Length: 586
Image (cartoon, rainbow, N blue to C red; front, side):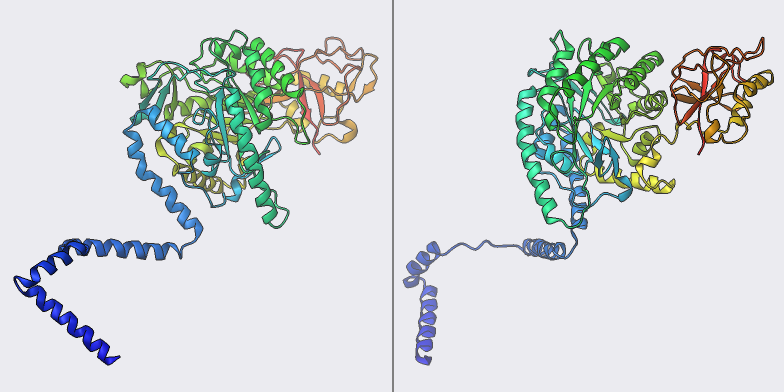
């Protein structure tokens, strides 16, 4: 063994000596140099930089392996901010196309952290993990539903989808107003059509169902996880009409028949400013006829235990008071499942009006729309008396904005423009800020805060407080017609009046009511359904009181008081045939 090592050492020594000779060793050394790999020569700075990089990679990898999943997930979302400047350099439509493709291919972070518990809520019998959704217009053709839901949205609305494929309006059709945090678009319902979208949703539907089954079987306990009919997350489908279509309702019916089986809720879009004549469908008669036909198309389909998907209507922010009242009346009369408030505006409020891009035709979205759409949201909440779920959309860019929408009457909120500017990192930020806002003001859940700034007080009032609103010369007539009206009414007296024969009756009148403020800070209750009552024969001559009809249906939760023509302190006269509906106190 020692001899072999000695021979090897001697051979290596002789080879090195031969290589050092100028003639004999030149040939051998050159051939060896030709076959041996060339080792790059590093400078001192190069070696230092390489070593530092390797050290950071090794050290970073070792640290990442020790951090929890939530921390790493937060890093990934924060890292997306680095690519925002790159997207800002691109054409708006190219940037949008890249964003959809990235989400479709899973090149975006996936939220692994649970949502704050105070953000969960139930709407339409569906469980939302949080109320923050992505508005229609981003994923028009259902290409990236799974990736977008994975970003942490509580729900995603695709579309608008038209029955027949159409290109939309000519390009350019999207314009940035970066300083104002706004966008003007006139896309015009560019869509691949309901058939292509149905194929995608069908494939995704099966995959999401499988994911849901797998996650359910691997989880313990009986906890009901948030999600829709096809797995985690709620999916909305926004339906539009073709530009050349002469029968709008037929277009929406086709959309319902083809896509409703994949939707957790449906939206009829009658408010885009970029399709000629579309906004005319918001008129009272047109909207009523349209909704009735679409509801019938939905209800005639076969549904399981979950029933048909809720049907909503998306309205414009550029509506008059009369238009709002008409829409509210239709929503209540047809029991519409909800309203999306609102679409883009054709107005150019300050500071947008001074921007040269403001002259471009199309709908304005983003921060300048916030006040307009929030005011509209509040008005609609009051008009519908909080009985129609509302989705607040327009100008949301922070958790505080989302909170204001909720306090104005929104059960759910949507964003789009802020997401286009801020990227995925904006989503967890908004949810965290919204949770903090709820805690700050003492709300235990989103549902508790809905309509807090415009909440219509329920008409649970003492009868004595009602009488105090009336003129003194009316009080005697009221007492003679209804008996003693002080304090909470007992069950036996919740609706005492006289019929045409002068006999005591406990038949009440079913009427919904809203409460408005008088200038003396008192409140009046005005019924939305008015039906005159016949005077009682037993009432004294000249009495302004009227009594209950004996044909009115009995109710166990309301009673009716005749409302005189003038209420103390109120600026307007009230129809003397109107009646005051007050809910019985327990």
